[in-house]
Amino acid sequence: TIEISNDPVEVSVKFLEITLDETVSVIHKHRMGSCAGQLVATLEGIQYETNHKDAFTVSLSDLEEFNVDYLEHTLHIKPTSGRGYNFTDEQPNADALFVFHRDVETALARLETGDQP
Image 1 (cartoon, one colour):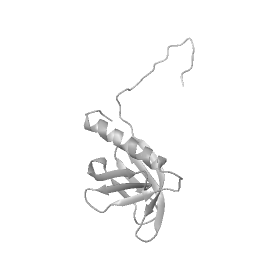
Image 2 (tube, rainbow, N blue to C red):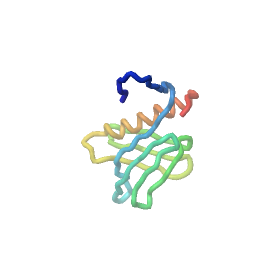
Image 3 (cartoon, rainbow, N blue to C red):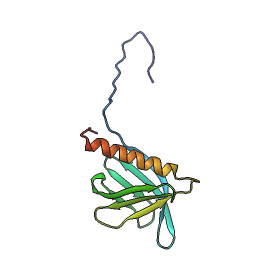
Image 4 (tube, rainbow, N blue to C red):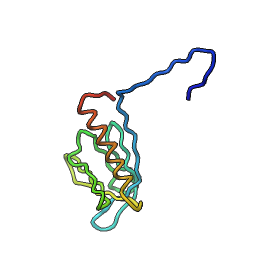
């Protein structure tokens, strides 16, 4: 918010700065059953926050697989070392998972081109 007054006001705009701060409520699908939590993505990585033992953190550079299957309503994350994780949510469609995936992929692509956080 910029307030108009007679005093000078300094405005700072950063056009090429990369930011990533996304959160989505998810259900981690187990072979038998599931657990609920949140996926949080920052420039440091992706964290699955849950009270269950499956909580994890993976840096963006350690993502071996990261994809979304919209029709199957599934987001898949696999670190370079370790097992893969499949997530869904309670929404009627996979829009939230798709947007989370898109925003992480956009940040990854910008980091690869040399843009700075």
